[in-house]
Length: 114
Image (cartoon, rainbow, N blue to C red; front, side, top):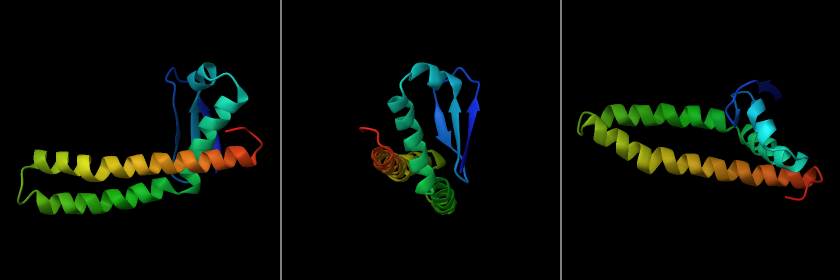
């Protein structure tokens, strides 16, 4: 696990495969207190701990195979819409909630008041 602070105007942070966390400087300028920044970083560490990048890659592979099969029976637009609506979006929401939960546990363990 490691980190990088990118000098970008966008307020954003994300976790790359392998646990590398990127935080843009605009985020650090927007969230000024230690607890605020710790909450964001805790969330991203939650993604790393849960290995969401690997999970996402594996899921995407299976979804692509499923989509290639379904495109033979339905239009590509319908397959993509249904895939996003019923498979990708709920999975993404679950990962975000899991990262929030892990992040809050890490914050509490580090002495922050979540």
